[in-house]
Image (tube, rainbow, N blue to C red; front, side):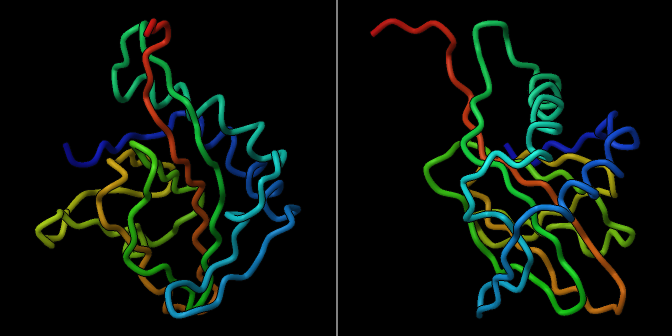
Length: 170
């Protein structure tokens, strides 16, 4: 398995509202050797943008992965990341979860899309633009390249999730 890329059909309906809600959110600037990004990643708060977008993303996951009726999607964490000039996120993976999701909420230039590589280090080529959702196995290394243009901004909403059986008896 590699990447699943889909056009998020509710993007135009939700974009402005989500950006407004994200800009009202209490966020932190991570600025270290691995990151320079504005995010709420470490805040365990059910911010309003999450209440709006999560039900839509869960439907998107069900549709894209063609989940059978005996399976459910269980989100583990939801966050946003806002990238501006000189912002980036180094190569990393997500542990203790099966899948990751990236929703490109705002991204004028697709040269700034998240980059992925296979476990052998080969780059994964894929097409993606603003309004797309990318679902990937959490073990795939990925990064956000540095934003090198003034007044450029990229905003993503990320989600870590598992796919579980609904009614399992042990």
